Image (cartoon, rainbow, N blue to C red):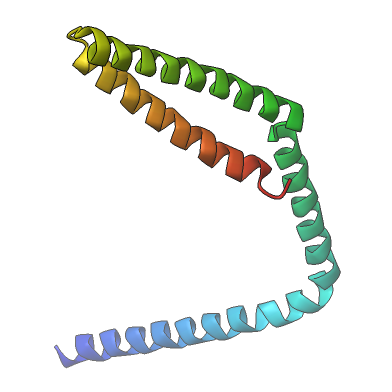
Length: 127
């Protein structure tokens, strides 16, 4: 039994020595790699940044398209406001039972007005 314990002890010491040696070798590698690839890593980063800029430019929306989208949002918003006003006049002056429809169109109008304002600020604030 003591012989087995000695064997396990020696094996574990050898394993620990091997792990320490492996970490010391791996720890020394980046120091050598840094000197030889400093220029290469800068080129790789520049290529990556250029590729990222090109991809973002391809996905961007032109100012003319942004203006068209805002114009269409404005047309829908004015239409909703006019419908809401018409329903309010029909309810208030003529006594029509259109309160729920009036409130639905009012909620849609307010929501679209908020969206229109946010999109306008995000796209066109700095002019």
